[in-house]
Length: 608
Image (cartoon, rainbow, N blue to C red):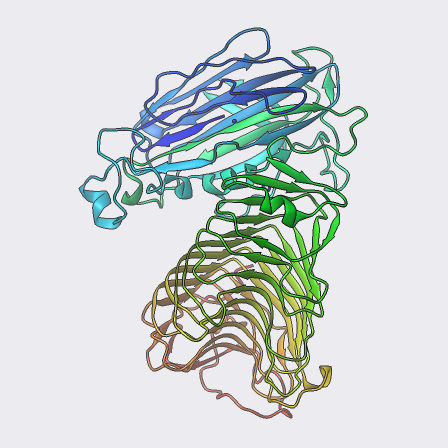
């Protein structure tokens, strides 16, 4: 799911109220709210514009032995409406659904759902079991909505978002019929949904097939308030049974709104959930310079040849499908120089340039998602890099999310300076820095070529709470014949070259057999360099299909249990590394485990 119902989920109570919260377009707007908290009710009102927007809602919950329930109703422009449902003692295993069936009476419309007020997690104090596993603190036990920003519940609640041809209710069950799922990656959470609603998501009016991003289908008009023409939107939530004590007493509040805009004579709709919009002939940098902290900037599906520096805190840049920033061989097309920035939905390219996206030293709270970073380099020197965190004067980074990006067609030719290609580089520079609370998930690294070394992810900074999960590393090629280069080649999906690691998890990734090094060392899925403290590293549940699945050059034993090593019988632990450009690129069918590696038990089949 990419691109105001207020959700407020509480460990103790869940309250969902539907109501309106403000008109956000030239047409008519409807806000729907759902609170999972202790509030008793939510007022609702509607302001009619040129369109009549009506929403029928369906809700249900299942708390096992604690009970089930459901409800439905209509919010429209002729009356005030309020709706609540309260659930006591929400616990792991509980689930529910909120389904919205919009009807735009008489006229086709562009229909947006967006998030104006963001998401806030509340800690609400901590009892003893939670305090034992969660040291964040914040808030007071017995007082709702306290400790803002310290709760973890939004990251624990998993959601699935889909279109449905119709929604039905029978007893305490709400069923979404003939569904078409949106992009719901594994582990998609309420926190992810809130971020994806930032800047507005244009609902597709096509019942059956997804419309291309550059040619959306308007939401069809209904003959009257009771006839459903377009698809409904279903949001199903569950608190997994694997969630532990860290969410006890926590709460989360999330708001979203629906807004309609006439489609007739309006072929290029602009999301109403932005503070500024950059169209053809405009300047993204000018919009950034004029923005205030917390603003959302939308960018049209045009090509902008410029270098954009984002120095405004908490700014969100949303690109419509095809919105391209071209660095044209110069400095990074995008430099993030302020905390809390979100870069979402762009094509980033810099042919002949060194970097795609640069995050300045010490910048925190960055989200880079749903982008395509491509056609970077070659430069002949230094390391061509898709996304770089830190520079030669580095600082650490906290609270970083790099999610659902494609990084591809990076090129480098060596001029004698030992130049490489890096998908993502956490650069230590001249002084060490630490990266904390970092998530690199569901990205694709592919089609890298270097005369010396293509590397998917390079971690030079110390880690504390870093997850690299569900990524794909494919078609990384090191070959002297690609250009001027005479160094011994090596190719690696993940390179760890720091000192200290705490809670560093590598899980669910696919390191392909097409990671190749043709003129030097055997290629490696994961390489841990000497002097790395491996005690805090766990490598599990991956496809290690590269010739060498894991090379541990450090002195400690790395935990690499339950991985697939390209062979049901497990890894080859007898072959050593060679530096010989004449040898075959794969010594055995089974991937090699080299160094002190605890690989048993192993998987007998692929994780794919």
